[in-house]
Image: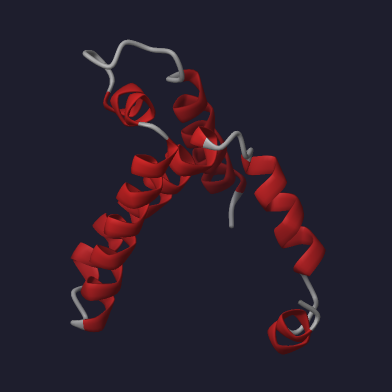
Length: 107
């Protein structure tokens, strides 16, 4: 992943975080936060399903579109529960170099 792509992800999470407490009449993100963490999680799930369907039917263009929605709604869901991008990245770093099979067995 290039620095520009990492910056895009960090910018997305920072923008989402900045919408906490914003006016729900002027910000879609603030509107999601206003509905509560459970609704944010449900919306993430809906978007994830749409991405899965796009992948299953091999609709590449729609998969790209839906994957962007998944990342956005994941950022909203995490922010609604006060989980930072850095916490997620730290967990990914912790797992780096560990076999997925070994990591799963350690739980």
